[in-house]
Amino acid sequence: MKFRETDLPGIGKKFSVITANKEKVSVIIHISGKREIYLFSKDDFDEPACSFVLSDEEANQLGSILMGAYFKPEGEEEKEMFMKNLVIEWVNVEKNLPITNRSIRELQIRKHTGVNVVSIIRGNQTITNPSPDEVIKEGDTLVIIGNKEQIERFFQTFYPHCELG
Image 1: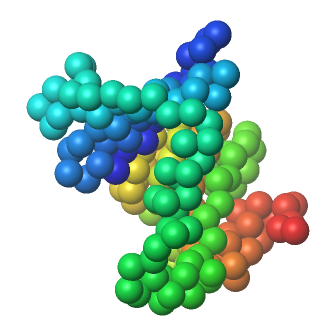
Image 2: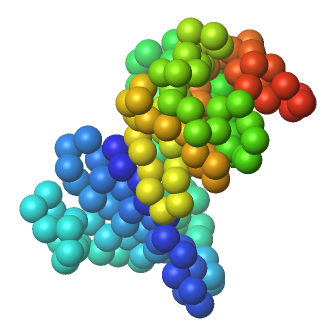
């Protein structure tokens, strides 16, 4: 899945998702709360195949349905148990940190902490599932995943001055 967020000055924000099946959905959230939803066909991401508008209340209702507030397929309880142990953190890479200008492989992040780097956000670019040779740069935001202990170990190892609350 690819995700992109774009500021629309004076209008609001646009969020676009390209699914694993190569389908694109874009949502424009207006400052007023109105939501425009655009669905694109697999072979044409320029012109939407259809679109519709949701009010703030309708969008909240649809979001609740998608989040499973009304119905959970079988196996959801096991997933919830797993998710309780799962922690996702967004980590800003600052100047003079031990991870800056070094590759994921060189740092051996997973070996030392158990944490996986699942994404690097660099400016307007998102590097999903970065290769071990990807160099972490100042200004990057790392998206890391692990359990609570692994995340704490990551911060103790690479951000010794930070504490998780």
